[in-house]
Every structure is written in structure tokens, then in C-alpha cells.
Length: 120
Image 1: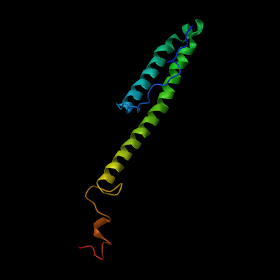
Image 2: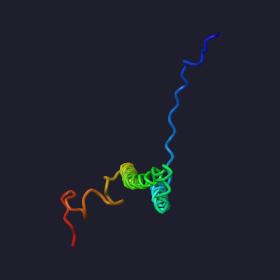
Image 3: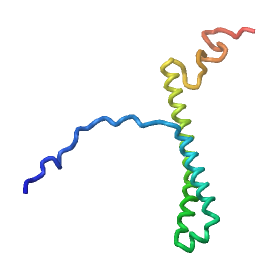
């Protein structure tokens, strides 16, 4: 028997591709609604599921809906953080302070700028 020479070699390392971004919040909301609908559809057949040992199907749908609620909270927070980071990066590239309106300089109304006073 000949030894396999290629089994211990590693494939060349490549840079990981960028993650695919899509309508994540909408996808999670849709999935959560689907889990709750499946739970509600199965409730009238609760006795049948219990008699046949498939009661876990009902509770799996309820658990999926509950975890989906957590998922909605999580992806909404993630989406907001991504948008904040993008806005901060864009403001930094434009030479503005984060949270500042475009075109606005250092202080509001020119107060405190090089000894100037606000005009009436």
C-alpha cells in the first residue's frame, strides 16, 4: 500500500471574502412571523400531536418564534451600529467631527471662534 502524500498538505491560504449583506432585518422578521404562524396553525391539532408523540413540533415552533424576537432585537441593533460606523467613517473622511451636520464647523453659530461675537 502506498502512502497518501497529499493528505497532510495544506491548501494555500486565501483571504476570506466579504460577508454578503442583504435585508437582514426583514429576513428575520419574516422568519419569526412564519414560526408564530406555524405554531398557531398547529394548536388546533394539539391532541393529535400529543397522541402521536409529535408534541415537540408545536413547542419547536413556539421556541422558534421566541428566538426570532431576540433575533429581531439583535439584528436591529447590529444594523444601527453598522450605519453609525459608516456615518462616522464618512464624517472622518470629510474632515468633520462625528455627529456634526455637514457643512457645520467647530462650534455653533461661531461663538468662541477667534474672539468673534455672535451677530444679532
